Image (tube, rainbow, N blue to C red; front, side, top):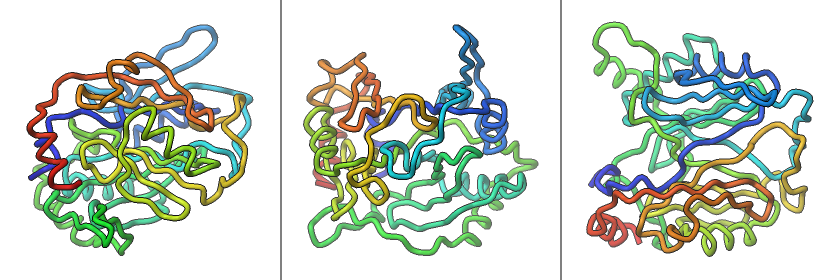
Length: 293
C-alpha cells in the first residue's frame, strides 16, 4: 500500500512566516526550488506566496521592525516539505548544494529520509520523502517506529541520476506538499490534549518531551516538543517566525464540519486556520487505520 491510496488531503495545508527581509527570503525559497506564485501589497504589508505551479505551500508576510523570538518561546521548530519520491529528494539535494545553501543535518527516520536546513532568518526546514508504507515498522507499544540513522546520500544521488532526463529545472515537482509541521510548545500534555480533542488528531508516537500526531495512520502531520521551550513564553505578537498554519480536515475527522473555516489558537497562541475537503473514500481510510492502528 502506498500513501496516495487514501485519497485524502487531510494534514497540513500551508505555512505562514513573518519575515523581516521579504526579498531575501523570497530569493532563498526560490533557490530552494519553490516557485513564486504571487506577490501582494496592501495596507502597507507585503506578502509573497510560494509553492508549486498549482498550489501554495508557503506564505511570507513582511514584518519589518519585529524582534527575533527567544529560543524558549513557543513557535516553529521546523516545517517540512514532502517531495513525491526519493529521486526528487536526490534532485533537491543536488540543487540545494549547487546554490551553496548549507545543510544542517541528514537523517533516515525509518519512515522517511530527510534533509535539514534553515532559511536566512533562522526558520527551520526539513525536506523529505516518505518510504513506502510496507517498510514502516512498529515499536513495542504497537506505534509507528521513527528512528534517526545516517542518510545514504550516495544512494540518493544515484537514484536522482537514474531518473533525470536532460537538464533538471531545479524546481520542486507538482505533488510536493507540506508534509508536517513541528512546533515548540511550553506544556506538552496541554498541547497534545488540544490537538487531539479539539481538532481530532491521533497520537502516533509519544516520549517524555515530544509527541507526534496525525490523521489516518500517517507517521506525523504535527510534531510537538519542549526541548527548548518547557515552561517558556507562549507566542507573542511583535515577533518574527511562525504566523500560523492551515490544517486540512476531511469528512472522516469528527470535528471537521464544526471547525471548517475557523481560525483557532492553540494553548501557546499559535494560530491555526481550518479548511475542509470532501474527497475521501471511507473504505480506503479504514484500510489504512486497520494496518497502522
